[in-house]
Amino acid sequence: MGLTSHKVLALAVLLAVLLFLGTVLLWPRLAHRSWRSVTGRVGLLLGTQLALFAAVGLAANQAFGFYATWADLFGQEQGQGVVRDHDVAGRRPPVKVLSTQDVTVPGGARPAVGGQIQKIDVVGRASRIAAPAYVYLPPEYFQPRYAHRTFPAAVVLTGYPGTAEALIKGLHYPQTAHALAAAGRMRPMVLVMLRPTVAPPRDTECVDVPGGPKTETFFAKDVPTELGSRYRTAKKWGIVGDSTGGYCALKVAMHHPGVYGAGAGLSAYYKAPSDPTTGDLFHGDAAARSRADLMWSLDHVRPPATSLLVTSSKQGEGNYADTRRFIKKVKSPTRVSSIILDSGGHNFNTWRREIPATLEWLGQRLT
Image (cartoon, rainbow, N blue to C red; front, side, top):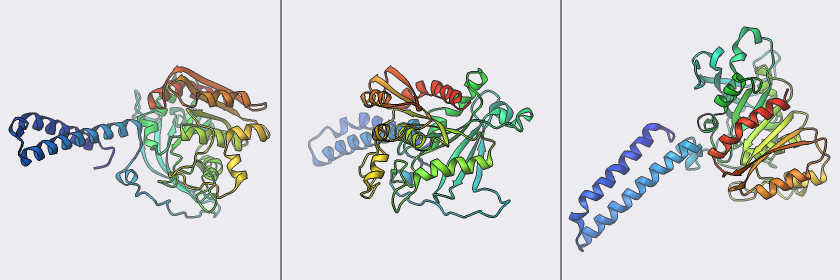
């Protein structure tokens, strides 16, 4: 059974309840000073606490999508996939649809009513990175009258470590996009949902690491090129993410305005960290390190012709002061917008409050 299985969570909860009841029932029998009684009490308390910790941890993982599998949790997921080149003219581009699923909206069993989510594998020609993703196709994509219409498209990124499934189950991007389009508040949009961790378990911060994964190239070139060749998408894309994904979204939009016409960072930070999860991202290259610092870029690089959206909260968010600094540094032709909540946190509940307005903003910028 998988890490995110409901059966695993139910078993953990059941075990915690049984251990709690066992502790209550057996405690009088163990109320002695013998080493056996003391050992029994310690064992019951320790077992109950571990079971409670496991149940809470599994529930939190399902809610926030930190890890997708047991191998991911224990840092055993290392492989980056095998790249196969498809350069012969007329052959199918390197995007493989693995499965499809309905969108959890009324009438979602019919693609022309609810849209469809396709699980795919993306193989980047330029970066030579292979990564899974989920593509949300709106209902209009399957309707005959839109058969020759292109759709605005946006990359949607999780934080680190994150799982792409969390964008569907936890943050409800497809459901929100469906509701907004049905209400006439945004144009139907294709969403490509994936995590920025393309070389797990390493956090590459969407950097082209010297001698390592070319993560920025993957998101800036491969994803829009390969997905654009398979799906009917408009030329200019949008990109949005939360936390690490938010930093990536802002950086990629700033560095590649010809590809991304808009980038939104929910609870984003503005400089690539250096810690045990990232390793050495720049290998002594001062120019690359500076380029990855968005505040530095605003001061020293020609402003890109793109639109940016940043979000924060006056209380509960650690990036509030930096977000205000970022807004003040932006110069034309870059356009900047913001969502500032009175209170919020670095969590799914806050981001769910920001996503509807963010998707509306993306739709306006990509029209």
